[in-house]
Every structure is written in structure tokens, then in C-alpha cells.
Amino acid sequence: MHSRRKFLLGLATGAPALLAIRSFADDAPVKLTEDDPTAKALGYKEDTTKVDATKYPMHKPGQRCDGCVLYTGKPGEDSGPCSAVGNKIVTAGGWCMVFAAKPVAK
Image (cartoon, rainbow, N blue to C red; front, side):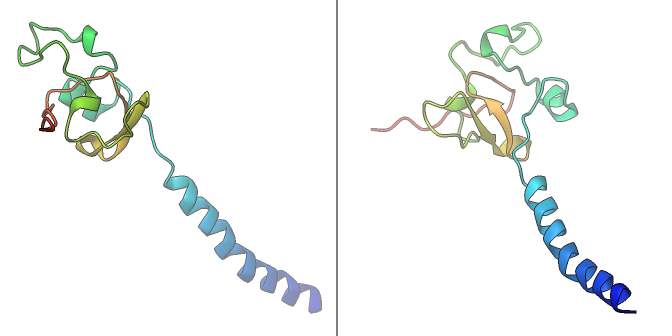
């Protein structure tokens, strides 16, 4: 009887810890790939120089994710989160068709 009680007590105290670890793992940033359905819908490219100008005529040279208001990565980093894709990680030098230039500081 004691071993069953110890087992149940261990299960009751250990399960919340395992669930907490699992929830932190779920919060880990996810990198957006060009194969992702959202990326395809937005015309996302990891390299702005590889955007098809005929398919996306609104693309202008020099437009990059790190110059967009939706990109929340730190300046100078290779990648960062983008609010347009659920805060998945995008490359700083990427582009998608919801690009909106950051305001220029005066």
C-alpha cells in the first residue's frame, strides 16, 4: 500500500513540473520557412534579392524585413520575429508582400 501511495504522490508532484517544461518548449521561437503555407500566401522569401519582380511588382530593391514596421528583431541581427506571421522568426534580409517601411527618423 505504501508503494502505491508513493507512486501516486510522485505522479501528482512530478506531472505539473513536466507540463511546465512542455509549455516552455512550446514557446520557443519557430523559424518561418518559404514552404510554410503562410509564407507562400505572403510571397515570403528569405532573401529579398530573389523575389520574382514579375510576380510581385510591388517589391522594390532595398526592401528588407528589418526595414519593415512588422519586424520586431533587434537591429543588426540576422533574424528576428515578425508580427505578420505570428512572431515566427524571419531573416532580416527577407521580404514579403505586406512590407511596410519603418518611418524614417528625423
